[in-house]
Length: 483
Image 1 (cartoon, rainbow, N blue to C red):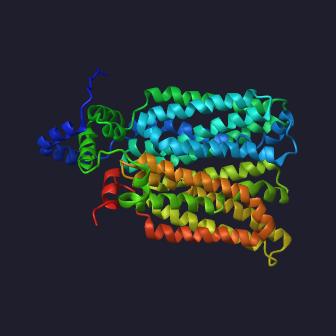
Image 2: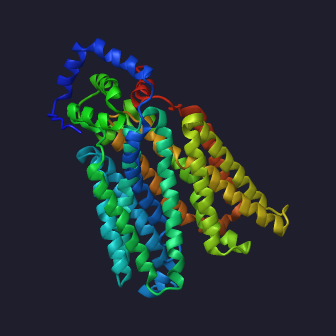
Image 3: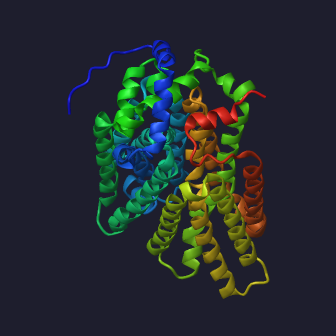
């Protein structure tokens, strides 16, 4: 390939050139449509590198599932439910802290460097967890890993939305959920020998350092987000990145669309108050509510309780976890196929409706109407149905949809706020689920979850717009058009 030199050009200067060549831009827009969509194969390698972050997210969520009991024996806190809970919740606390700062990091140093930065605490934290001889060392390692987990998911959503061609953006967005499922299943498989082989749990943590290092290395060769480059006034570099991602035929129309939108954007830095008041409140409210309803649907409670339900059915824990993982992965693959066909809104409606039905099965199983064997089948079936329908829409869609509906000016910081909501509610659901189960019983608890699922259906019908087949700029104009 011949080398091309790009100097940093202020986007306003670039806009002047664009105005002078308006007819040429129109020609490229028409030509782009006539020549069809850009090749998906150009952007695919960059997306696959980014989804390594999602794989790590899933792996670290599942790595203590099979190994926690052995870790507690080796590190001397066996029998302490508080210490075992801290090993899990410290990671969630770190994720909350990481997610709080993820937007400012992604806007400050760019998407590529943010990926590399999130890989660093994952490598250090995993190494600490693998080598520690004390509970304190394990907790510090888990907290560091958690900060990387908190930074990563918002940046993945941003990156996928900003570098994907419009016609496959939904499909690429589903890759993140699939990678998370593969990470979870991988952690379960690698953890199986932990009860048989002395010290194997340390290997489970060491393993995770390698994909984190690969992520940091490959990001050095991946494309930077053209959206971020334009926000920084680096229009010529943005054009070079678009050429990598879309091919030369589609560069002019893509850059022109972004620059036209930039004309009406404010140039001041985004303040936290901008996200909660005025012009942007509606989209931030939609985003935060979607993530809140995702967690209040009870999906994590289902994950936490699945081993107990399967144990009652005589299914070994390893096989039970694998059944849940396969249901999750299967739904994610179906979502990938349907995302750009049916659209995000339809998948959300089907997903939350299916989860409400699955919670109904759980309520029936807990009632006096079902026989003992019937209750067992209903409970197992309801659990698998809940996981499957969750992975169809409520799992993969919010992260992608929010990166699509948030305007470029606030996208990174708004994602950070919404993911913080996600982690806070995730933490409290995990903390309170077993206590509520004991105090109010499964019937009332699963009825509450079903109610939240139905609230989510009504919320999506009223507030969520379809983004399938629309460019990020078209979505922004539609949502924030002057009233």
